[in-house]
Image (cartoon, rainbow, N blue to C red; front, side):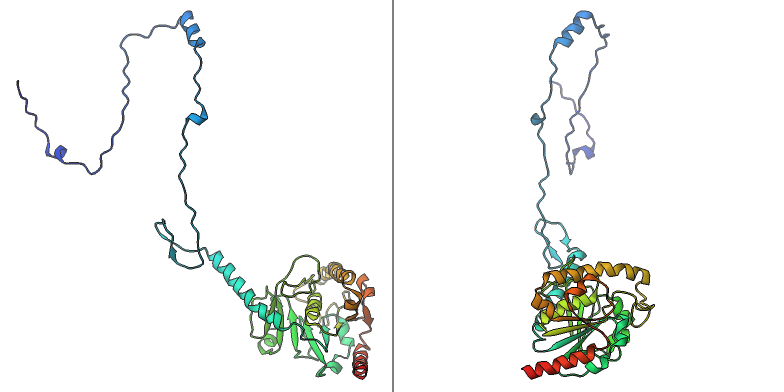
Length: 329
C-alpha cells in the first residue's frame, strides 16, 4: 500500500465557530440531445393524472406569541420579555382622570340634601335680570343664591357658582381667583380649587336625579343647575334670566357673549328648549311645583308646565312667600 501525504493548511484544521450544512442540488444534463415529443408520448403524458397537493398535507407553523399584560406599575419587567415594558402614556392619563373623578364623588355626596328647608335662587344671564330687584334677595338667612356663568355684581359673591365651560375661568379670572364659595363644574373644566364639586357630563336629553351618575347639560348651564337643585333637595327654586330670546337687542344682561355669535345663539334656543320640555313631561307635578321661572319673555312651550312670575315683581313675591311659609310652620 502506498501512502500519499497531503499538506493541509493550518486554517482548515481549526474548528469553526458555527457549522452550517447547506444542501446543494446538482442537476446533471445528458450530453445527448433530448428526444422530440411524438404523438404517442404526448398522449401518454396527458393520460397521467395530475398530482395535486392538498392544503392539509402542508404543515403550517405559527409562532406562538404569549400575551403581555401591562400592569399599572411602571417600569417593570414582563416574564419572557427581553426588555423593560413601560405602560402607554394613555393608560396613565386614563388612570389619572379616573382618580380625579373618584376623588370628587365625595364632594358630590357632601351637597346631597343641603337645601332642605331652604329656597334657592338661580341667576342666569338673560337680559331680564336687569329688570329684577335681585339685591333684595341678598344676605337672607333662608335664601341661597347660585350664579350661572358670568355673575351679577349686585349679589356677588354668591354661595354657589356653576358653569360647565372652561372659557368661563378665563373670562372671569379675577372672580375665579378670589372666589371662596362652592364651585359646581362639569368635569371638562380643567382648573381646580379646594371648594369644588365636579360633575360628569351625560350625553343626550334627560334629567338626572342622581349627581353621582352625572347631569345633562342640555346646552344650557341653567338646566344643569336645576338638576343640582334637585339633588340638594331645595324646597323651592326660583330661576331668573332664562329668557331664551332677544329682549330688545340683547341676549345677555352684560351685552355680547364673546364665545357665541348672536345668530348662532338664537338658533340654539330651540335645541335648549327640548331639554326643558323633557323635564316638564317627565317630572311629577310635585317635582315641577318646586321650580318657578321668573321671566315674562320666554316664548317656549315648556313654560306652560311650570309656575311663572314676572321678573319685575318676582323678588317681592319671593319674600312674601317666605314670610307666609314661616307663619304656616
